[in-house]
Image (cartoon, rainbow, N blue to C red):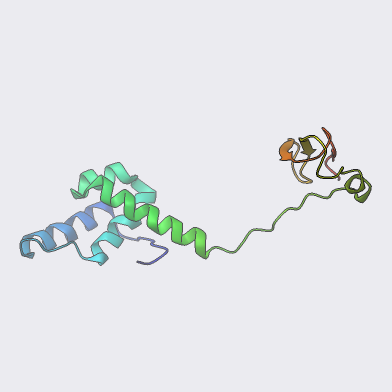
Length: 134
């Protein structure tokens, strides 16, 4: 299945393609992938519900195929730049040994303003707090 489907066809045109296929298909014959692709190309414009109703396709099957394509697009898209949290080396030296009580390590991601709390075994609470550096 193609990862990206764009359509220059209209809903009416795809409906006609499906009707032509339905008139000449044999019993039990599955809808060809090309017709599914045409229908999927319309979903971003008209929505899954309208496309499935108008084309008399299973909403569940159309949505399943749409989700598969979106998952393939996410897999094929370039990896976004990863943001890392910087911790002051002096704070790392303050980390107690494995015998210490469990605590929380509070960090502020460098590019965001909200706190992230991570359970950190054997750390006093809070061990590290970083503000947004501009």
